[in-house]
Length: 203
Ligand SMILES: Nc1ncnc2c1ncn2[C@H]1C[C@H](O)[C@@H](COP(=O)(O)OP(=O)(O)OP(=O)(O)O)O1
Ligand SMILES: Nc1ncnc2c1ncn2[C@H]1C[C@H](O)[C@@H](COP(=O)(O)O)O1
Ligand SMILES: [Mg+2]
Image (cartoon, rainbow, N blue to C red; front, side, top):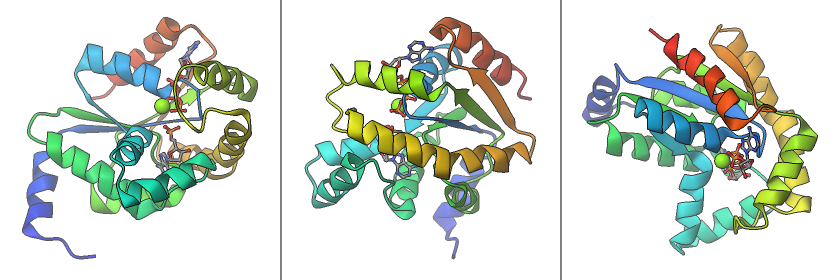
């Protein structure tokens, strides 16, 4: 991997910005909590899923390929999603004091590559809910979301993949001591109190 002048300038610009990974199962409430963090703390919310859906909505050839993968509940290639996140971070580097990286890393390798190319997270917010709760929430959300992956078959695949590929991410960062778990079985505002406690504790 080579670093150019541009990468050095980017690293310098974001050196004081907090990077928070927001990890949890599909429908656990990551996006819901991130919106509240944006409102209270003014951080920049970057959801990897939202970035990918924007590419799909653009109608590009790449978007068509991504849609086929997401429809099946599978993960898109690491480089694609990391490049999108990095570009979105660069676009906000002058104004952002903190980044919420929602839905990333989905596997340990994604976390390692992020740290090589962008920087280290200071916190991993683990948004925890039971499998049955997540399925219920997504089935309900699917009535209005328009998301092609909010259907019974794809929800099951997304959940299986979460347990297999993403839960090890939490164990990986627990080893670093930066994981804070919030109980997303509780009402949204109660969950947010726990989220706020974790963010307020950051130096
Ligand atoms: N604590 C909560 N209690 C009840 N409903 C909740 C709670 N948090 C979120 N929801 C609802 C809002 C949505 O309709 C649905 C999923 O929440 P959302 O924030 O979109 O999850 P998510 O971002 O983790 O899902 P995905 O991984 O699919 O993007 O559940
Ligand atoms: N970090 C990611 N790596 C690979 N694929 C991803 C990532 N984030 C989102 N995706 C794909 C696969 C997911 O099923 C869909 C929807 O993501 P969501 O976080 O539920 O909005 O996008
Ligand atoms: Mg979401």
